[in-house]
Length: 55
Image (tube, rainbow, N blue to C red; front, side, top):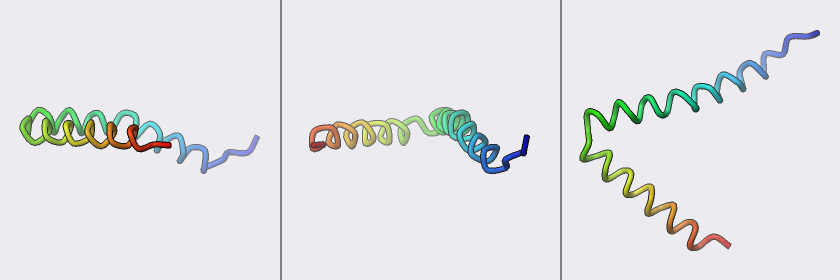
């Protein structure tokens, strides 16, 4: 069996995104609640517009 570095790197990125982004978001929400509220509202609005105009 040959060790494939590219698969390991791909899995590492997936776990980084899966665990890293929520951790950073939780930290941001704790210290900047007003800014994070605006950000979440903007993201929800963008998703709603995207779904509305999606063909």
